[in-house]
Each structure stands twice: as C-alpha cells, then as structure tokens.
Image 1 (cartoon, rainbow, N blue to C red):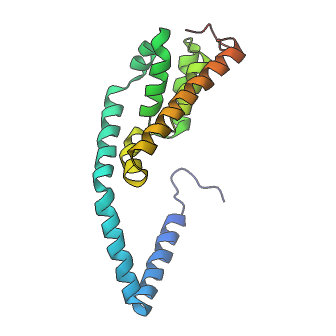
Image 2: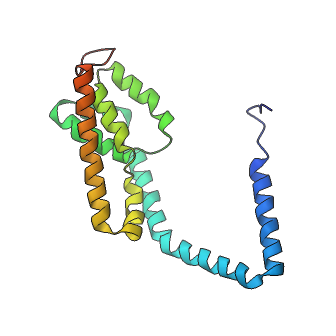
Image 3: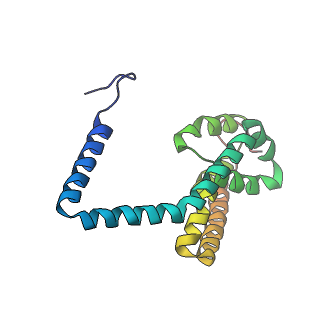
Length: 173
C-alpha cells in the first residue's frame, strides 16, 4: 500500500497502543515490576538529562554558525584536511541531506579525499561524546575519537591518491 504525502502510516499508533496495552496488563498482573520499570526509567532520564541538554545546545550552535559559505571558505589549502575532520564531526542530520551540499562543493572543486574525510568523521558525534564518556570513560572516548579522525585522514589521502586528487568535475582545491 503506497501512502500519499498527506496520509500518515498507522504503524506508530499501533505500536503505541500495543505498548500501552502491555503496560496495562503488567500493572494488573505484576504491579511491582511495572513500578520498577517506571523508577528505572526516571533514574535513567535524570542521569542522561544533562547530556541531552548539552546535545541540544551543541546542535543549536552548529546549525547557527556553520553555513555553506563557511564550508566552502575553509576547505582550502593545507588546513582543508583539518576542516574536513572538524566539519564532519560537527555535521548533524540525516546523511542524505548532506549529499546535495557535498555534490555542490565537488562541483566547486572540492576533492574526493576531502569529501571522504568529511563523511568518515560524521560517525564522530561531538554532542554524543559526553554521554559516551559517562558510559565508557574519558580515556576510551579520546583514544577512539583520535583513531577515527586519523583514520579518516588516511582514508581521504588514499582516495585522493587513487583518484589523482581530482574529482570528475574539476581540479582539486
């Protein structure tokens, strides 16, 4: 069944109804389990709430300050690699939303290596790092982040080497 844009799928409501039904059964048959689940959920929310607020703040800041013009300006010269790493980490939203921008930057001369480095670094999410630290510890998160950033640089250099540092549209920056 293909839905029109104005029609919405009933699946989320069905899922919600099933979940509420299961909790109603649970509260009737095993109220102590139900209240244990509620208490654990509240404790978890209180634990991660500061991280969620920090995530929201970082998303607002990055969406306000990082524009297409800023990206084009900073993807040049020797600092372009560092810029690709940093902007990849700061990028947010679904990946498919970045493809048109990256295509436009590629048309303006951005090399395949910079694009690969940017895409690789999208897996490093700065807003989520505080939450990762709370679960895994700061040493692990720092080491993982550095390894991923350095690997992205290596990946970008390899792709530039394979493609000759150029893209199909124009010369590399």
